[in-house]
Structure formats: structure tokens, C-alpha cells
Amino acid sequence: MTLNPAVLEDFERDVAAMLAEVKSEKGCHHYSLLVEDAKNGVVNVHEQWDDDEALIVHLAQPWITTFFGRYSGHMRAHTLKIYDIGGSRPLPGM
Image (tube, rainbow, N blue to C red; front, side, top):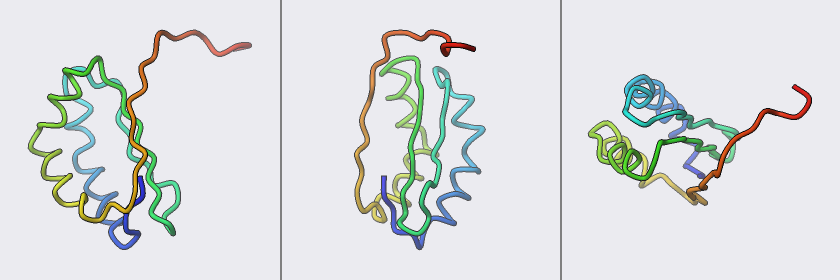
């Protein structure tokens, strides 16, 4: 997603403040909001949840609704999508 670069410092602070809470949610395997290009406000969102139910519960948490309320007006664009993964396997050669 792309945010107004002027809010990225606050965004990163708020992500860090809620990270432990989110990672302790039932069904959370991975949660990362990484600023990849601060000049242009590009943030890489990578989350891994057990299922849609766990994600829906996550999105309703008060710390998430507050976070969305704080930053949704600063979002310039996004290509947020859900990808379903059918399985995993070791990295070849490792």
C-alpha cells in the first residue's frame, strides 16, 4: 500500500506498539508491515492467518480499528489481496 510519506514515522511507531498484541492473536502466523520506500510511502503488508475466521476476528480488534481509523485517510493507493496457499515445501538445495 502507499501512504502519505509524512505519516510514516508515526505509522512505524504505531505498528511497533501493536506488534506483540497482533502476533499473540489466535491464528496469527506472521504479521509484517514493512516500509520499503519511505520517500514514496510504499509499505509491504504480509500477514499469514490460519483462515478467514481468524483474519475477520483480527480486523475487529480494537487496536486494529483504531489503527485503521488513524491511517486510512492517509492511504494513497493499495493492491491488498488475499492469496490462498495450497501447501509448503523445503527450499530446493537447502
